[in-house]
Structure formats: structure tokens, C-alpha cells
Amino acid sequence: MKISQKDVEHVARLARLTVAPEELEALTGQMDAILGYVDKLNELDTEGIEAMAHAVPMSNAFREDELKPAIGIERALQNAPVAGDECFTVPKVIE
Image 1: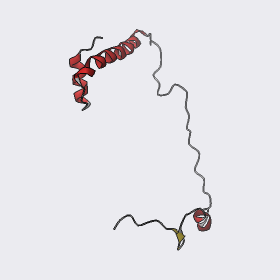
Image 2: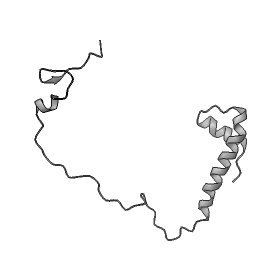
Image 3: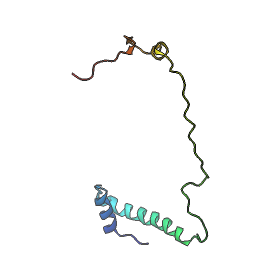
Image 4: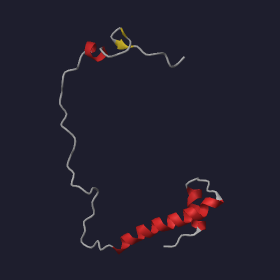
């Protein structure tokens, strides 16, 4: 597939990119090479290949929910830089 500078300008405009005229020729060559590699994929025989979402078979990676006791206020606040009234104390950020 041959891509033109006009195509590159159009893609840049869609992406809201400003492309300097001196960059246009280099980008045209790069995009043409990229599309050439992608076009090679059309040469692959994919007959009988099942579509997949992952290259490796995946099963549910989540663990079962388990009820556990809370860690407690003392333990939760033990590494707090400043704590008071059983809460974290932080600087005021809204006036």
C-alpha cells in the first residue's frame, strides 16, 4: 500500500497534530513502511484458525471473596505521620 503526503496530513489533522513540512516526507516514508508490514499479515493463511482474545488460555484469575476481621484502629494508624481522634490527620486542602 502506498501512502501519500496528503494521507499523512489527513491523519495528522484527525489526530490534531501539527506536522512541520520538513517532517512530512519522513513521516510519509515511516507510515508507508508500517502499513507495508501490516499488509504482509494478509499473506498469512488463517483458514481454520479460531479467533481468540488472548494468546495464552486464561481462566478466572480472581480469588474468592473471604470475610476477614478488620485490622483495628491502632494498627491502621500505627504508621500515620499524624493521627488524632482515631483518624488520620491531614493538612486542610479546601478553604
